[in-house]
Length: 98
Image (tube, rainbow, N blue to C red):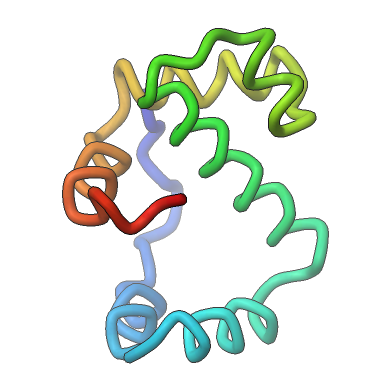
């Protein structure tokens, strides 16, 4: 599903994220790194993925998240045919979500 990047990926960003020790540190870092719109979009996509993973249907997700049907569909494709990143996170955070 993911296209290969045209430029080599910068592993330093991902190493920096892995160095963070708490949710508070992570939020501070992402607040500095991203615009408000970028953060809201990522948070919404994660919420959509979480809802899909928990068996919610499109109309319920739309009402819960405000995401467009295109966003829900795109996230669903990532869940179905992506690299498995969501699955890793969902497995490791079981019971952490409210």
